[in-house]
Length: 112
Length: 114
Image 1 (cartoon, chains in turn purple, blue):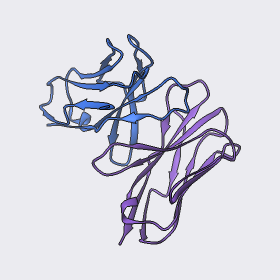
Image 2: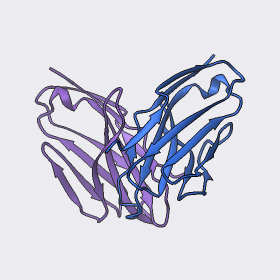
Image 3: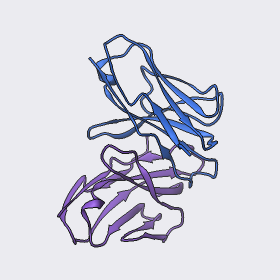
Image 4: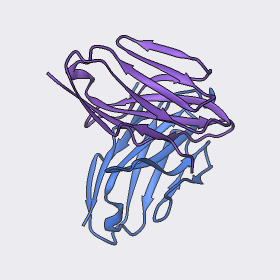
């Protein structure tokens, strides 16, 4: 079982705050890292797939970076809005595996 | 496209009863997965399939069986339900573009075993 850690476990911010959280994964045998957004009572939806060391991806106010050599990825949300409230999951895929390993997620609550 | 559809959405079982959860995908994906989600535990892999007619055990397979007789369907069976199997179950599918392809999830099945 691969160790994929996400921190913090939960986060409360005020509307307009910028925030970031971390996904840590094994630095060896890296193939891909996915970020998913999971709203309450819905199913997870993919935000980003990251495959190269130094990758930076952006979608609106959300961006992510990747460091495969040290085994971490950051997710940033600029100017958080209440609709950003969700659990953010990362999933690590090693080379040659069909199975992504999910972290336990970071629960973000944005207060108006 | 419907994407990934799970049935049923909710179910209450008595201890010892059996049931089958159905996952259907219309994206012609090769890979399909069954996860359970429990508070504080994240998504844990129960079983997975890399193609029609194939299945394999995941992290927490005990008490479950699966079948993939048709490419589009992945069935999860509980032969004799136990209260420890109370959980939310998610099915996911993924294409063969490699591990960098995203997974698509169903809406989940909330199962309570009393």
